Image 1 (tube, rainbow, N blue to C red):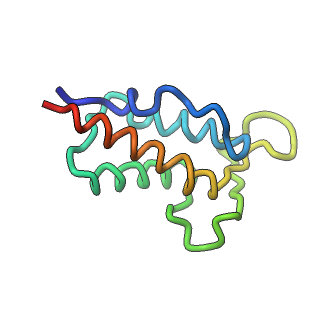
Image 2 (image 1 turned 90 degrees about the vertical axis):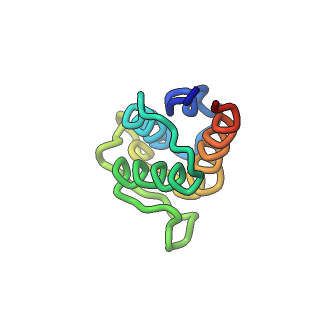
Length: 111
């Protein structure tokens, strides 16, 4: 039995780095919905990084200081100075490792 990405993205984290992080998570989940999780760990991580790049126009791991934030206009979630900002540090230290771990855990149950 293969697991799908929608199971990997649910539940959402309870804490985010910046206001734009949750919409990135949701857009990544929508982009991968219904797609099977690759059996190869490297392929899984490559796919996650590719979708993050497509959603944010930023590659991970980020070659610059990870404390830097990224303004992503397409993720503008309302008024306020922090709308649209994505924490690259949160994604490198929390978001991507969490998704990769969940995908890896699900793969161990595959038939």
